[in-house]
Amino acid sequence: MKARRAWQQRLLFLQPAWLVAALVGFVLLFFGNTALSLLFAGIALFILGMRYLEDGFRAFTGGALERWLTRCTNKLWKSLLFGGVTTALVQSSSLITLLSIAFLSAGLITLTAGIGIVFGANLGTTTGAWLIALVGLKVDLSQLAMPLLLLGVIFERNKAASWRGGGQVLLGVGLLFLGIDQMKLGFSGMDGVLDLSAYAASGWQSVLLFALLGTVATVLMQSSHATLMITLSALASGQLGYENALAMAVGANLGTTVTALIAAINANNAGRQLAAAHILFNLTTSVVALSILPLLMELVGSLSGWLGIAAQSYTLKLALFHTLFNLLGLLLMVPLVPLMVRLLQRWLPMASEQAVDLALQPRSEAMYLNDAALVHADTALKVLEQELAHMANLSRQVIAAALYLPSTFTRNMAANQDLQGRLPVPPLAEREDADALYHQHIKGVYADIIAFRSRLTCDLLPEQQQELMDDTLSAQDLVEAVKAAKHLQVNLRKHIDSKRPAVRDGYRQLREQGRAILNDLASREDEARNAAGQRQSADLLAQDALFRSHFEQQLHEQLRNQELDGWQATSLLNDLNYLLDISQHLRAAHDMIYIRAALVAGA
Image (cartoon, rainbow, N blue to C red; front, side, top):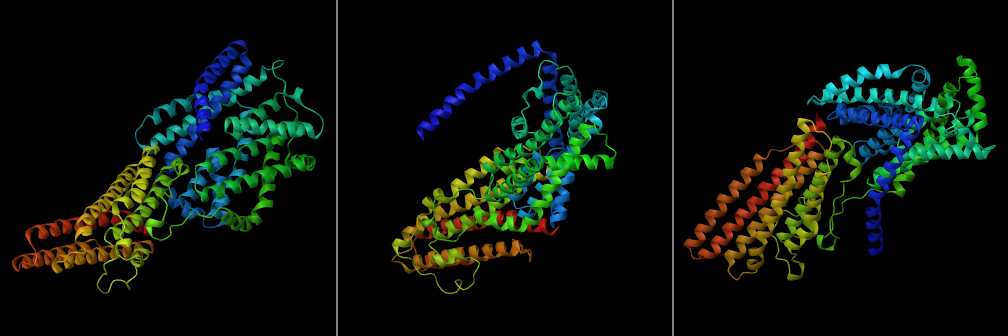
């Protein structure tokens, strides 16, 4: 471990030096050759334009994403269509893949729906090749880019999310157009500087070499569209042969799997399942396409004649080939989706909460938070809601342990069979330390929630900002409830075995009331999850007020009868307040977590 940390520190030390050297190299290259500088500037503008398109898409989908997904992904064919259309609109299969992994990690979609979206995105990305081949290489796009950039800057400065999103889309399209134009100019002036055809070998060696080149280019630029743009520009300028261009297109398709791999590292097992499906699809499609490349070339030639594409229109034939081999992938893989889902869920099972004794559990960490969900505000808020439910469950268990409630009750608080009868006094060996349980199970999860919140940098709509604030307050309420239980346990530990019957009976009543509170909240959680109804918090408020009145009246009578002294009575009163604090904070957190979730689901 120490050696690895030392190596990482060494890499971090070298990183600025490598960056400076690369910048110096690029500056010298730009001054040395205008054609190369235009080419690289065009690539940079193209990638920047795609980033603006992605940001604009996120702005437009904020707050409505969950509703869209519910309607558009309940069947496999709808998921395929959704993936294809959204990719055609934003011209980024990588973005749709990242979003799909985030959706699945947050539980917004099923694995089948996620696979459908990713498969559809592969087909949707073919629209980019057609647009570039039909328009991008034949029209002076820089003239179209200028007004789009101007309007995009004006709209993007608006504070309203919809206007800002529209401005980002206009900026993205304008930068894409400008980048395409710069790449065309760059390739047109590269005679004698860079001749890709010089690297062509014979037969399969050439095919595999250019497929590898397309894969590497896509990995470096994180954009198959940018690789396709380079390929089409090189093909149009005569820098690249037709067969080698087809191989580069296949390699570009394979290179997009790196995006899924990176996203899978920061996702939960659900996200990894989808990343594995994406990699399997692209790998299978690419291997099959390269294996039957001569047959596909013949098919493209036949279809080109039928569609009226000239024999020498290699850019349009490349776009047609790109569509055909992605369609081939769908024909091969879509029938296997049910089998793929079963195998992936078996190989990468989802973690689940198990109700066992807290003392026997390892240190608790966040179960649902993952960096993949940070790609979109809706997914980030969804996993945050799930993690709060996990923290609420842990908090109830810690509070039950603090009150020395039976382990049978702790495992199933919503069950009614354990509500009847007086609570027994547990032996010393079974009395758990609430402070130790707090540090073992609550503090770590709370720290993960706060850290996750700090990494949420997406633009939030006003209602999303309110939801984020409510979630933060809910987490604080849960922490305060557990801390109140810790304080209550201090006196409970001292007096649960008291020789004075009135003291023992007072703490027994506090424990029984705590059991009733926990049971009621656990039952309300189940009701909210099933949308069977939400009982109002006024019920608990009334119960708390009634218990306080009865308990305080009983203490005064016991003081008058000298069954208690003033010291013991004040201890019981303080612990009564701690118990009511537990009830208040738990109720506030549960109302925010479960009742709000049920209301949103029913909307």
